[in-house]
Every structure is written in structure tokens, then in C-alpha cells.
Image 1: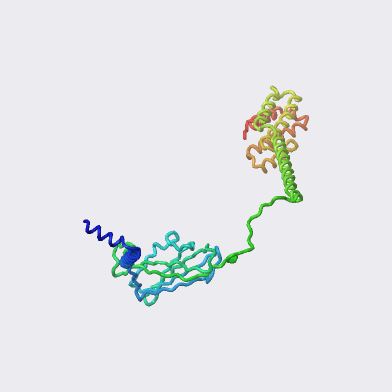
Image 2 (image 1 turned 90 degrees about the horizontal axis):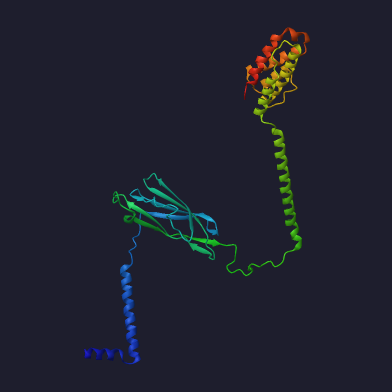
Length: 342
């Protein structure tokens, strides 16, 4: 043990020149060892078969910031191979720093039983500060049909790596612009500029006041036009007519008063019934108005009949006393009409 310590002390405890030489030898040994280890772990790149070829195309040689462009990949291969296309979607394809907007794919079978695959990538450019950029490499996976079995996943497939072309990047700004200034703060405002905002507020206030005034007038007119409740008015006319029917129709004056009373009440009742003014209408005009408004035909004929009878008996003085039975018929028809509800 003492001999080992003595040898270690002689080796590292000498002068500084010896220590530097020993340190350099150790660093050289570590570097060679690490390179050998990395060489052992580097993956082996398998080139694609010679019968699979591909080309790339761009619809723009240069794009501006925010522009979209198409990156087309065309792969020619025989029918012995089959490419995996299910994973080619906008969400799964990564082409950073370009943004994938859409992924199109189309497979064409040629006459010589060959296959031609078209993969159309719609990319958007948001890169700034560079004059050109290489499109990232794109990987397609395929199977050999003679080796493909049911249940084989993508990890067992072979890959075709496609190196992207270079595209130019354009910008409206020079690389190092000198005339762009920082934002400045407005410290003052010209008083003449306040005229337009003040005028706008005045116009807005006038508009609000005018709108409120028109709304008030509209509500007022609607209330005035609405009038009394139709059902209650019809019920009042019915009660008023019943109270004016005489007990006997032997008196000519009582019959004449009854005809006048029935004539006016019937017009008023039908006016509420049809919701239209009818007080100035004759029997024929009342019939035409009720037909125009689509009233019940039987009711229309009965109303016209009563009005015609009242008009005839009112203006025929000698007929009132001799046709007391007509008064009973008018009273019966009036009861049936006034019991009609809408």
C-alpha cells in the first residue's frame, strides 16, 4: 500500500510539465472513446429502393410574410409497394416553421401498372428576418406487399425521406430599417377638432328625443284607436234593446218606437260584431259589407231582413197598426241576432 501511494505521488506530484502531459493524454483518450461510442450508436440510413423516385415542386419561388403556397411531392413507384396515407392530415403533419393549412393526397394508377402518388401541402409563411429558408424534410411510410401482413403497424414500415427545396422569403421592410420610429404620445389636441364630436353628441341627443316623442304619440294613438272592449259593448247593446221591447205591440206609437229602437241597436251591435262603422249603412249596404268581411251567410240574411222590415215599417204609417205580427217577427229575429257572439 505504501509503495502504491509512493508511485502515485511520484506520478502526479512531480513538476507542472509532467502534470500537463498527463492531463492532455487523458483528454485525448476520453475524446477518442466518446467518438467511438457515438459511431457505434449512429443509426444506419437505408436508402430507398431504386424503383421509387420522387420530385418536388413549388408554385412560388418566393413568398411574402403571411402568404400561402403549395408544396407538391410526386412519388413514382411500382405496384409492389403501398404507401400509408391515413396519417397524412393537417393535424399530424409538422412542417415548422411553416404552418400547415391543408394536406391533399391523390393516388393515380398508370397504364403500366405503376403508381403515382401526389401529396399537395398548402403551407403558410410567417417567417421574418430571413431571405430564404429550406422547407423541412417530409417522411412517407410504405410497405412491401409481399412482406405486409395483417396487424403490421407503422413502426414496422419502411420510410422515404424527402428533402425539401429552398424558398425565398420576402418582406416589405429592409433587413435593418433606420426610418422606423417608436410610438409617440399626443400631448395636445387641437380645439377645432372638438367640433365634430360635440356635433355628433348633439345629433344623437336630438335623435333620442325625437324617437321618444314619436313613441309617445304612437302609444297615444293606439290607445285612442283601441276604444271600448267589443264584448262588453255588445253586451250593453243587448241589454239596452231588451229593456226597450214593449210588452204589447197593439199601440202603433209603441211599435214605431220599437222599430226605431231595434233599427239603431242592430246597426250598433253589428258594428261591434264586425269591428267596423255601420251606423250610416242601409239594409242593402249592410248586406254587402257583411259579405265583404266574410260574415256568416245566415246571419247576414237575417240582419238584412230585420233592417229591411224596420225601414219599411218606419216609413209606412198605416202599416204599423195593421201588421202587429211583423213586430213579433222582428223581435224574434233580433233576439237570435243579439245572442250571436264572436
